[in-house]
Amino acid sequence: MRSEAMQRLDALVGRWRSSMHQAWFLPEPDVENAGIVVVDWWSDAFVTFHWHADGADLQMVFGHSGADNSYHDLYHDERGSDRLFAMTFDGATWRTDYQLVLERVAA
Image (cartoon, rainbow, N blue to C red; front, side, top):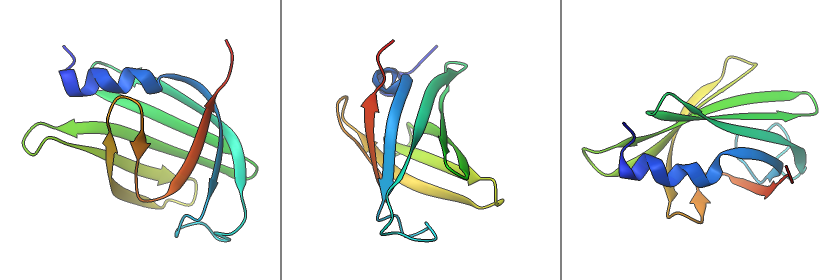
């Protein structure tokens, strides 16, 4: 059964156009990296986030900790790089430690 906090992330599920820039972990932070994001449920416990762009493929898993009422973003990419980011989501706005702009792709 999904927690109420995780159910809020259902608003992110779908296919999105994306652009990422000014992320400290990018090789060239000033360059805008455009791509496609697919967000889906993994069981009732997590949301998966797959970002595909020119020469890059990264994956994230979003979860929620009831102990401190916080969201977390576990990141992995094709270089074998992995990180844990704090994130917030209020039902409309998703924020994390890097700038990623999403625009829903029409079904």
